Length: 397
Ligand code: UTP
Image (tube, rainbow, N blue to C red; front, side):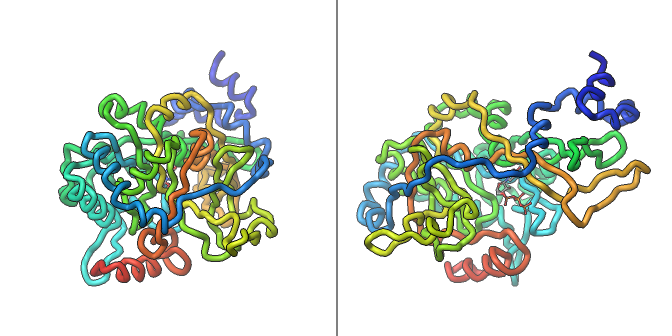
């Protein structure tokens, strides 16, 4: 069928007159129309199954068995069994900078880039284990060249370049509130990174699973936690010993109403439930010791077993439809930056992979030692709070 007719049938005839511009026609051929059609259901949250608390490994037990877990983890690292996957494809819109988030300078009296701090954390592990860990960095079309150049310019912050690989995640289109694909420039669709749930398929597409066949565990983590412990041998050892197919670093919730996704069981499978999906009764429920029943907040640091990822690779991960402010070209060709939500983006989320994995060990970490997210410029989870936490951990800024 002619692309023009196809557009008409899919309610996209507004694009027909632009087909000769830029790479529009080629981009349109790559579009996953099944995903785009999800705009019809809008942002409405999906019904959840039966939610119950999940058992996790608490600090006291981890501390008691630390040496045992660490030895197991270090042995896996030494045989090349762990790869670290740095999710750096996000746009960091809340931080309000167009540069890659990891290139953000969090220093005060001297530069300290987020990437630099993360590499330092990883180097500590490598020196303890006596081996380097492959570091696979996911970027997006928007920041790939800049991220690579940044690492090269800073000599990979002392990490051996031969252990570093970059791979790009895919992009997804955006539509207005009536499902019409938006343009951001003449002949250019408004595209944005398709969420962090596509990391494994993008990694496979880049051939990195075949390049590192010895990898038994992928440790996947967010760029924006500057206290992130990457390839933590204790976490690896505990997850291996638990025989679970996935592990999640968690912090205990500071208060019932804290806005953090909570790891629990949904219809018997591990799942992350958003804070707004928990009823006030559930959020406040406590066990006989007085601990919250839904206690474990996820911090986006997961271990996934490689063989399980291969098994679930063909399963479809849910697509989330999210309302956002999306800059677009109006009918006159003027770029409009809307001040309220004007359309939908389509994203998959890594937290949905926990359920697909089938079993998961919640592994408690000390919040003040391992969780300093940089999401906003000021206020909660901001540059300011992260600086404070870094200093508390002895990092000179
Ligand atoms: P966030 O959900 O905080 O999104 O990402 P973000 O894009 O960085 O920031 P905002 O919401 O626009 O302010 C959590 C982690 O997932 C990665 C981010 O880079 C971060 O490490 N991520 C997010 C991707 O790698 N790709 C994406 O498409 C989205």
